[in-house]
Length: 451
Ligand code: TRP
Image (cartoon, rainbow, N blue to C red; front, top):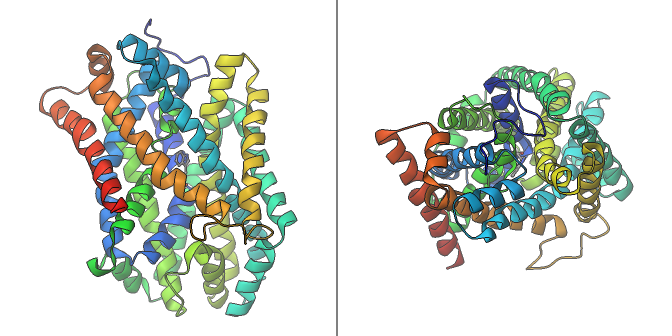
């Protein structure tokens, strides 16, 4: 394998653009919609602590491994893994990391597109003032009526998926980079505005107490698994999305420093989102453990009771929609890159194919809230629940573990050393984290959950 310094799909124009793109992928519904409600369901503080540990000890090492493999391969994950395995004299089976990633990507995108569609719909509902002064019943029935209507849910899911396809079809520079360049700074500004708003509620301290008051009695091994799954999901790890973005990263950027930076930004956004949401929840005497509806029922209700809530509520859902779109493009890109390489089809056609399949699988998730809400398996899980649980808590950790093992133990030494760019003690620490701590931690959490 000749070392390639450019990807055929295009390149990020600078390290900063890689950071924005990777942070764009990482910051999404996982931070704003999923993190607060999963933390709420698992009792807050102790869950947050485990989550932070997972980010530091598992997330950052695995992210650096993914970036490294992507940049060393400079192709779609499937083809990069194939080339790197061959170069390292390892079994071609390692290519399976790419295939598993593609599967996880379709599963995630299928429910992601649905929830992102809800967020877009809520921009309009908030904008027209539906929630101003609304009671709990109004907020709940607005949500139930909307999600209970398959045509509406699928309609908004379709709008969101079409936008995703449009952006990816335009390519790495014109599509992906241009999108993150504008949306990410906008997102940070909107978030800070909302934090300020939340501080004005007088309940900011209660929010902090909930997020950082460690109450270990409420934490189970199941909760630890959820915290680890959340760490993978929120950093976009384990399905080779970051590997794909790494393939477009300039050769001279430091990998470990960049990974830490991206993880830091993502964690900051999740914690800030919690600091926006929980004070609003407590200020209005609402439940922190409201589940997936927390963002769609509890928050509009809270905004509806607050001065300026119509504007800030609308701003909030714009923020969520932005965050979702910069993530969904990273779920589509790996499979699109592979189709372009493998079948030689145009990027536009590839984007339509991948988006179309995800949209189709996503119908199952869209229907989980209405016509298929009774169709459950594994003790009451809907299609949506199964997609979410299997991808986050199983496929991503397994994928991440394999990526870490390959990067630390299998990959050709020369490739690893020349890519990772650190030496001496720092290198030893890095290889311990990637090769031992991260895979072992994933393994332990799995074993403990099963028992
Ligand atoms: N990280 C995103 C979020 O928090 C979701 C996401 C985008 C993702 N790409 C991914 C998750 C790849 C896992 C793998 O919303």
